[in-house]
Image (cartoon, rainbow, N blue to C red; front, side, top):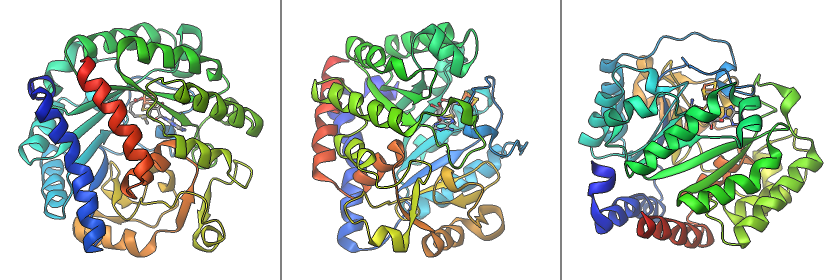
Length: 357
Ligand SMILES: C[S@@+](CC[C@H](N)C(=O)[O-])C[C@H]1O[C@@H](n2cnc3c(N)ncnc32)[C@H](O)[C@@H]1O
Ligand code: SF4
């Protein structure tokens, strides 16, 4: 198994590759799609209250294995070194193992995001991923209010299996009015079991997600402060300090989540976005977009029609925004922008993880 047979040096080297490539890209001042977020199915076996996946109620067929392999070849040719495999629920694909193995064969770092439901029975198929993210929204009542009755037990079983099998694990939690009381429990659990914990705020303004479960502005601020406090107390929270502070000083109501270029210029204190520059999203239909938040609005070109190179160029030339407060996006932007503080935090978390595994 690559993820736990690499040994400590192998694990450190595989995690160093992306920062090195980011540095290279900055020095050469040439944009490359170093990171691709790839949606390979819109199908799912859960119906979470807030899911971005319901954004257009669309039923796009999964890209075929032949399509996916051709897309991967194109990414690699353009300089991609890191892929996050996303959905819908990716473990519903029969060929998920073959896809992961092909990505590894092409030399990519592979991160996979799953709801965990099928993980105990399918984990062997994806044993070669470099990192794994499982979604859990808190204790049973809170989690199941968000993610559906009965899901909590299955997600905990998936996390147990991932830890037993030595996967490089992080847990992702989306904060809503159902589960904003769960932050401390989630952080304590991460510390106890030795994985890293990520938090997201609802991508409320953009998705046709359930707005009823969205947090109010004052609750968002309280939540950010609590996460910041836990981080300062040493809990293994991936969400970075700079990112949390960025969201806390957001100068607009949270309903206004992204800033265009002119507004961004007036707010240089906020984190500049690297999506659509060094990271792009390819959705299930093959559309190439800056990030999932813009899925409905960006006039994308499709990889099937024009190829990845042209579709990526189109993204670079037409990216509509330059700053946002979304926690996962802003963390990536800090990494891609080579923020020293972010790297220092990450080195500490990752080393702790490697040593304790
Ligand atoms: C879209 S899901 C896809 C992968 C997998 N099915 C899962 O649930 O982990 C990836 C992550 O996005 C989160 N998510 C879904 N809808 C969201 C929304 N409207 N705002 C913020 N995060 C969301 C989920 O909680 C999950 O952790
Ligand atoms: S968040 Fe994930 S598990 Fe939940 S409905 Fe969306 S894609 Fe499915």
